[in-house]
Amino acid sequence: MSDKQDDIVLSIQGMSKTFGRNRVLDHINLNVRRGTVMGLMGENGAGKSTMMKCLFGTYQKDEGTIILDGREVNFSGPKDALENGVAMVHQELNQCLERSVVDNLFLGRYPTNSLGVIDEGRMKKEAGDLFRKLGMTVNLTQPMKDMSVSQRQMCEIAKAISYNAKVIVLDEPTSSLMTQEVDKLFKMMRMLKGQGISLIYISHKMDEIFEICDDVSVLRDGNLVMTKKTSETNMNELISAMVGRSLDNRFPPVDNKPGEPILSIQHLSTKFEPHLVDISFDVRQGEIFGLYGLVGAGRTELLETIFGVRTRAAGRVYFRDRLMNFSCAKDAMEHGFALITEERKANGLFMKGDLTFNTTIANLDSYKNGFALSDSKMVRATNKEIKTMHTKCMGPDDLISSLSGGNQQKVIFGKWLERYPKVFMMDEPTRGIDVGAKYEIYELIIDMAKHGTTVIVVSSEMPEILGITNRIGVMSNGHLSGIVNTKETNQEELLRLSAKYL
Image (cartoon, rainbow, N blue to C red; front, top):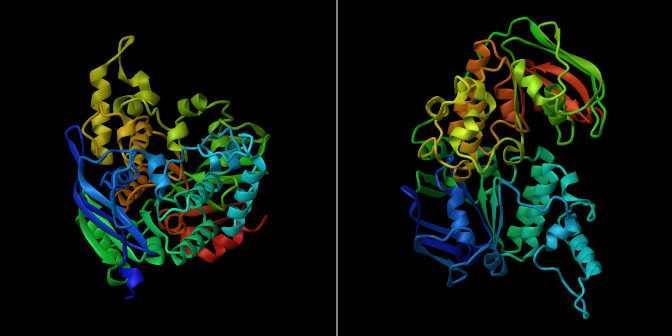
């Protein structure tokens, strides 16, 4: 092993952090070698993001020491960290969506000319040079709100790189990226490694950890339980370290038995961009129907159109032979439809509310005593869903913002389960969820299907879409390019259908 690889660029020693009665980090010791990728794994709530936020200055640690490049540091906040060579790309993107790409890139550090005026020409040149260097094609003047989640994620990674960081933390960077974009990200990461930059890669995706990481550390319940070279461990050992038990299979058996067609989508098209074009398919009762496709293919738009939150130009939706052309989400909900959205913070949760509020908000009529809401009924329902979903929290009165991303997703599941939906549509339902919790979600989906619920699930993860569905509809540029039986297809066929209308 070379001296360069042995060189420790970042050393975290004895780091602890407590929130109220909850000890989130317990004397963590972690070393990151220069020019390597350190994988950081653990179940939701294990402390991964908290540890990185303590490093980044977003939180102040209670105990411990951080040594960066041989000197002790204690950043007062993210700006201090960035200026000293530590950058972080958060799982939940925090961007000024009304502003352009170039504005977001230079936010807080606008260059000025000799007259003290912002030098827009220099900004565009430096931004253009950066994106070219990274092999990315980006419209610099485009508002961030007009970009897909994956495009915004890549821009945020580019911003981190632009600070000439010694250490870059990537928190679930591929959670909304397609295979081709992941390949591009990994190419970028290898290029940064070659320049001596160290990366800390937080992910729940085992395959990616073994593909891109040199070392891997595992947190469980606020303790660092394992650090090894990826070449010296395997998937089963990682899972055991994460969840304290072995998972012999990544997916439970899909043993639901779909019945007769119950939901019929006929010649559905949308009025506004991005357009859907003449989509038709049927879904059976108790079926798990997957939707796959590249980013921008129209999967999310299809779910939103069925749910009544996107304007139809043509087409009809029938459920049990009754016309269901919903004009709003309330219509859909009243007819037994539910939708888990891709962007949980933007349109899935009330971030200033507690667990009880977020669990019961979609089903308030069920918690009334006469004309008034019953607090005891709402708390009882919340406790039931906390138990069902194995949500890590102190109790129903916890603020939703205090939970990890994966546990927030579990609360969204619980909210819809309280309505006992007949058609449950899910857009990236396991995004940001750890391997143990994913298995529980898969079991829940399959159990719902076995009890007659029709499930439509969008996923960008090829193993997942092949592992938990009965059939898969493949979207390509706003068209439905084909429907395949899951047991009779493979990754190559799905990719071929994904490119059919490009």
